[in-house]
Length: 388
Image (cartoon, rainbow, N blue to C red; front, side):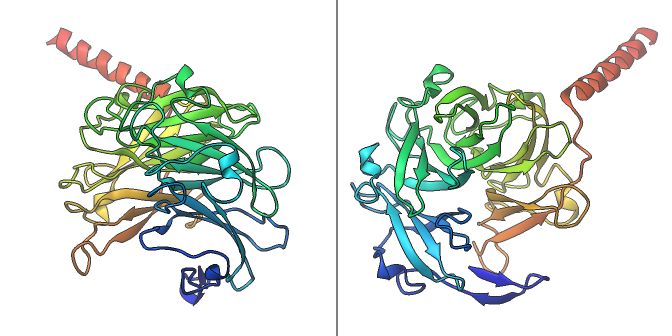
């Protein structure tokens, strides 16, 4: 945890690990647990007026090698751990609802879903991107209902076998559904929170072109309807072409309503996009309709979106491995975005970098307007041809 001043300088810091922050008073981390791969704020779960935290350890071995785990951390005002609750196959009642197996990778992604059952406590969505429902590494996502002590009081799994996703799409072996997750708020206006889920090895359009699912949820967190975004679904191909190994859906982040049409928009990372060099990476800003389809899109890479006016991406920079909405930090009324490029070579090879990207509304036109422009251009092109 970093304590910042108004200009972003670090005034203080607290590390939470096996040696720092008092986590070891409650649980012990083991070699290769990968504690900290994913983190999300949970608001104030226990009612002590201090924000709490969920942290993944997706290679934890409870229930089998690399089955995965999530820690709910209740913090003091100095961000030391006051108490903790582990969610895994061996802890916190999770096994009452579902079984985690070896190499499920439970906790590879985390997101707060909001208080969806109106009990005053934030719910948590957890990705298990190597779950084997429907085939090896097809993937899954869990919604966890917590009490004030961090215990799991209920759970709902969405996979090829659970949660009714199969009524709309089929997950298959190797899809790795659940590698990343974002809460989208109430996209379709039914008073239920919806979510976006990455499936970064989906083969729509080619090997590992990948996909993102927009899931509209019922009150019981089953899937009411779904919209897949890929080269074959959701109208992304109207605007851009994804290629093999792009890994579209490496990250997802809700951006609020950028274009003022009443529907939330989102950023999607494509970590192995080759604009500017092999695996240089890219991010797509997707303007969504209330049905989850894409009304418009803007790609940000070395070739699109004006990024090259400020910085140069090189091969293996992997822009888009992570993404987060920052709020309107430059005061222009438009949400801004932080994007990770963990392979950036500033300093030495693979040092990594983060870009803070200030967005504008230039590309917030609707699909209808875009189609009208295409129609006008086509008309005049035909007219010129006829006159010639």
